[in-house]
Image 1 (cartoon, rainbow, N blue to C red):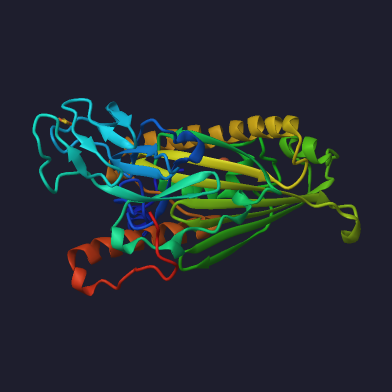
Image 2 (image 1 turned 90 degrees about the vertical axis):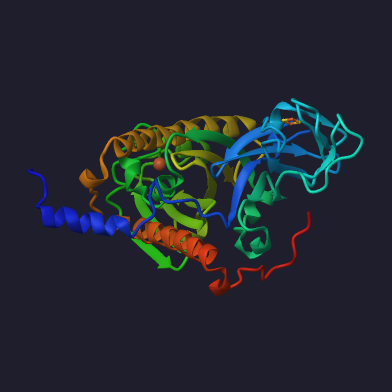
Length: 383
Ligand code: FES
Ligand SMILES: [Fe+2]
């Protein structure tokens, strides 16, 4: 194969320009996962989120506090300081900040200057995760928080993990809407050869993108076959729905059953995975994962087995996407072209949506008088 004709390359580059990619500025006005709740204690946790250094801690009323991690006096990271009765004391000259980020004490003088402090971000703890709103505070919109009922439902046995991806969150969302890679990138874990060839359906509408695939009959890989007992060759149905729920969350739901049994005799085993990418920088991502199942709920061996197998597979994504990032970073823009195929439809639409969101934010910022208020439809936030 020779290089495509210049006209073909130009067309593919024009198509790519209409999609978000690794250099698209962040979408600020949305909820992202800042941390798992069990990572945040009464000590300081430093984390870069959407390119911003943030310090997190849990106050004595259990609220999660998130502040800019830079002292406004001489820029010492506040995360290097200490917590004292819910207040944060800077390690350099001892300025003290309360949970609102206001400076309440300057040790070298009797009074504290008014109006010095650091930005505080809104947080919401739901189930196992702490969400953060990094955008315009007056646009914090509860209705944008993706529903996550099963994450808070005791009927689902869950395990969780945090991976660090040396790549863009845009390409991670793309990966999650492109399950044809299971047969290849995950050939040694939870992919099977028939997966990429199985018929699929897609759902595409504004802000909603899903890929549905029924792989029937199929042979399950050990991660599913062992805990469900569906170990026979061609015994199982594998019904998959992969859905972009928000810029900060993607959910994959899978049902398994014995496809040789009549419907009324089947036991259906369900698993779900919440994939929650939070950009660290444009080219790196905190990849929060919670995996759940509605069977063998109180069996720690099954939990451990599935967790190990699954996170091995998710690590394959992380490694694959890091390689992709290296190739993208090493290619000059004028030399970069990528071609999409039919199964890329949902991810192309999703990336166009992300770019549209970012462009709208930028335009609203430069023309605030034209911006339509994104104020919450839902109940007001409490802090
Ligand atoms: S740098 Fe924080 S008190 Fe001086
Ligand atoms: Fe994957």
